[in-house]
Amino acid sequence: MINIACFHLYNDYSGSPKVLRNVLEGLLDREYAINIITSDTNGVLDELKGNDHIRYEYFHYSPCENKIVWALSLIYAQICLFFKALKYKSCPVFYINTIMPMGAALAGKLLGKRIIYHYHENAFIKSTFYRFLYKVMLLIADEIICVSNYQRSFLPHGHNISVVYNALPTSFIKKLAPDVKKAYIRNNILMVSSLVLYKGPIEFITLATKVKQYNFTLVLNETKESIDRFIEKHNIKLPKNLCIYPRQTEISSFYNAASILLNLSDRRKFIETFGMTALEGMSAGLPVIVPPVGGIAELVKDNVNGYKIDVQELDTIAQKIDYMLQDYRVYHRLAEGALSTASLYSNKKMCDEIAERINRNLE
Image (tube, rainbow, N blue to C red):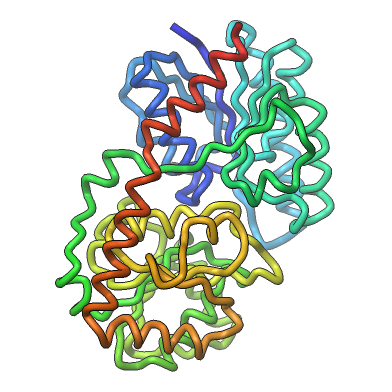
């Protein structure tokens, strides 16, 4: 049995811990013994509890709006990661999810472990701090797994850097109920997002105001209290055709109740390296509208499974929504294209490729 230690900084319901959860489930099926070290925030990684071959260890970390408090919390978390990682001398592989668990990676290098980074970010479009973490990754990593060709294009040439596309677990796909006819008549536009400006929550609300003949559903990876503060801070007036939901532990029902899935990330401030919500939407048979650049754009072909439109072009997005929901033949073609695309992203293939990289590092 292969024993590995996995490190992830913030255990919530965003894309990167979801991917790690899928990977760990696949490795457990392949009889790996897994130690997961992450924050005590009751996120998606806790869904694997109960399996005899996984062991959890926690530390405290919770990001906040106050930059000084956040910096202190991050420093504390890195120290915790470093010292906790030192205890895993029996694990030949340290699996670092995102570039954030730097403390664990440094400890792993000190112990002489093989270090595998699952790199979800694009450090070049973020802060100087992220670019520093990126340089640390290049120095430490024995293997770097990218999630898209877009993301890979920013890294130097090297035999230890590869692309493994994300995928969804079979357990999640089984909860989806694609039905093109029912989805078409729902007239419900869905966005699942973090509560940050560059992800487009205000633009989504603006879009709901523009297109009042359809229903809009916004699911935010935040508490209700944080959402209320955000609305008050930005003086947002909510239209009657919009429903906002806080963080959900089960998201499949929202996809099953939707017609179209949107991602409104602003490419001037943030570029998606993959786009899990787009894949989730397409797996439910939903046509999608996404930004025209980034890894997420690799999932979408215009007029085949959706459209690639810049968030700055809200009028064009509104027109495309109307175009899809006013003609069933158009909607049906795009929905079938979405399902066909989603079927290409196999969770088994993703886990096989990652397991192969772990095993290769043990040779």
